[in-house]
Length: 448
Image (cartoon, rainbow, N blue to C red; front, top):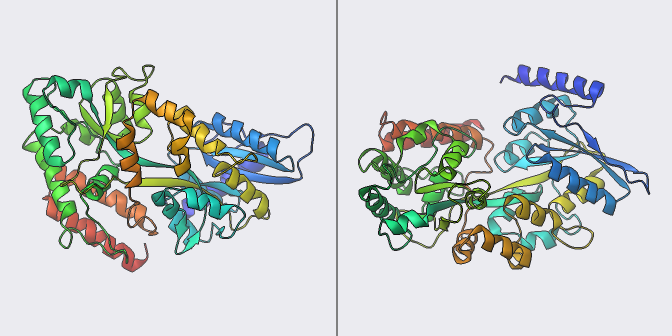
C-alpha cells in the first residue's frame, strides 16, 4: 500500500470514527465504553488492539474501571490480519488513541516513526521487569529504552502424536533433526502415514518461526549484535537446517509437500483433524490439540524439545506482544495505569490479565512466578504438558536477533519466499540464504 493510499484510508477512518463511533474494518465490534454507576469517570483513555477474543478484553477493561473509577476506557478492536496497516493509517491521521497493542516485529519502526513513547521509570515497572522471562523482557526494549508492558509472551513448540510414535516402535521423542529423521522413517516404514511431518510453509505472519527455532535449538545464529547477517557462510547453522528441510521433503519424503500450500492455521487444523504425526506451531496451539472439543486426537499429543542439528540444550524462538502508549497522548498517567494493569498486576497485586488469558486460551504468560500458580499448573496438567520439557523450552528460548530492526518485516517475508523457493527446488539452499543475507544487508544500509 502506498503512503498516499494509507493516508487516504486514515482520513476516511477518522471520518467514520467521528460520524458513527466505529472504525473501518471493525464494524462487527462496536466501540464499547464502560462507566461505573458509582463514580463518573474523570479521564478517558482510548485503547485499541487486534480483534482476538474482544469479549475477553472488554470484560478485563470493565474490571480495570471498577478498580479505577476515575478512568473511563474506550476500547476498539481492529482487524487481526490488517492490524499494522490500520494502525499506520490511524497514526497518519492523528487518531490512534492513547494506548494500543504492539507486535514486537513493529516496535522499532513505530518508535523510529515517533508514534510510541518510552515508559522508563514509571511506577511498578521494575517489579514487573524482574519477574518477566528474559526473552519477553528483551522485547519491551528498543535502543536501551522500554516502550511497553507485556500483553503475552510465548514460544514456538514442536509436538507429536505419542500414540502413533509408540505404535511404530519408536521408544522416545527425538531431540535432534537426525533423530527426527530416523523416527519419521520408522513411522513411514510402519505404514502409519505417507508423510509423518506436517508443516505449513505458505507466507504468513509466523511463517519463519520454525526456521528461527531450529537455528536456535542448534545453537546457531542468523545475526550478530550489529544486526549484520552471519549466515550462510560465517555461521553455517541456517544452511544446515534448510538443507535438512529440503532433503526431508524430496529425498526422504517424510515432510509433506502439501505444506507449501498451507499456512500456519491451515496446518494446525489439518493436524488436529488427524493428519501428520509431527508438527510445529505457536505455543497456544498445544492446549487446542489436546482439547476433545477441538481435536480428534486429544490426549495423544505431547510436546517435545524443539529439534536442532545437534543437542546443545537450547530452546526455540520466543516472542512477545506488548501494550504501548502513544507519543501524542494527553493522558499518559492514566494510559500507563491501564497498560500496567493489562500487562502486569491489578489493584490486588495479582497478575489477573495474564492468568485469565492463559486459563481461557492457553496464551503464554510473561511472568516466571506464574509457573507456581496452582490454577495454571492444574491447567497445564490437564492439557497434557510435560512440565520438565515446557520449563526447559521456556527457560532457553531466544528472541529473534534482528527483531528490533525497522526492516524486520520486509526481511522476514523475503526470507520466507526464499525458503519456499528452496523447498520447491527452484534454487539451492545456499543461494536462497545468500539472497536473504544480501536483502538484510541492503535493508540495513538503506535504513529499511
